[in-house]
Amino acid sequence: MKELVRSSVLNIKPYVAGKPIEETKRQLGLKEVIKLASNENPFGPSPKAISAIKKCLLRVNRYPDAQGFYLKKRLAKYFSLEPENFVLGNGSDELIDVVIKTFVEPDENIVTSETTFLEYEIIAQVNDRKIKKAPLRYFKYDLDAMLKLVDKKTKLIFIANPNNPTGTYVTKYEIADFLNALPESIVVVFDEAYDNFVDVDDYPDSISYLRRKKKVIILKTFSKSFGLAGLRLGYAIADSELISYMERVRQPFNVNNLAQEGGLAALDDKEFLKKTRRMVLEGKDFIYKELSKLGLGFLSSVSNFILIDTGRDGLEVFKAMLKFGVIVRDMKQYGLKDFIRVTIGTQKENERFIRVLRKVLKEKP
Image (tube, rainbow, N blue to C red; front, side, top):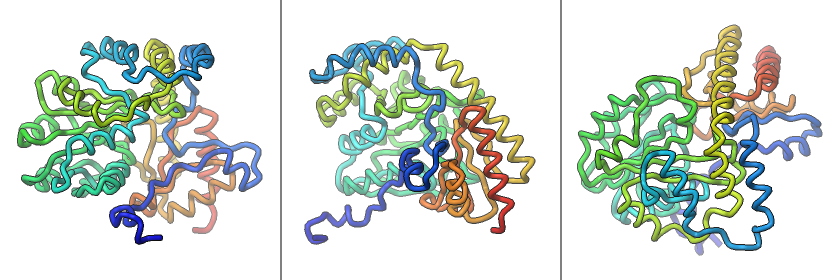
């Protein structure tokens, strides 16, 4: 059957998602499993979002608002922009696909980094577009190296900030110099899925670039800090003209009723967002201290996850922890053989993670 498939599809290595809780329970016969693999919000969804979703259930026989009028209006108020500056998506993944389909011609290319969100490369391959990747420098985007990859056929640049899976970021000073060095014909996409967890002063204000008429697209999501990963709701922010072209490519009814209503309510739940941020920062400090006691190397993260050097095969550590009902993320697909990535959980989950990690590391490598 291979002869029926496009050659670009045959070369794709599919994205490997974090192992589901129910599947792990079923396969290993476990009663209690915690998942710290997919950077989800461990504190659940916003209570206001839950209430709004319940009220919307009786309307799921109707198609959703294809334009997402009320959610765009609320987002515009949230960011002091206009509704025309937003396009909604079924998570950031769909929006990455929409961006590539909208702007990159078959003979043009995309520039990003190695060891970053895998979907940039996968979706580029699905669309048969060339992607060029610069290596990280000290586990961080090397913008100078990326500039050297830019040529006359470069149309898009993807920058995950903070970066997944490293948790590192590029500063506002680095971004300013980078944007000034780029040709006017290139669109820069800032993927800011984890921006609500950032706790540094020199993180870029990407909206300010948009207001200064830079050719930028900013991707954000309700999956992480807002706790709505299961509803698949993301959005892109850009100049209204760029948005209008993306709207031509976006599928109709791509964001369902429950997601739109949940997103509206979640934006109003400031206390939930504040609590989530505080608990993540506290949990991260706890895990830092415990990892130091274990003598393990790790990257300082501005997100809700930590990349950890286990000093041995990370896949084996992942498998060993799985037997004790703790799901972390092995980094084999990212080329980081000795690493695992762990999401900050509740304090109870964080303590269990450390106990199991300590037990696993005591075993013979």
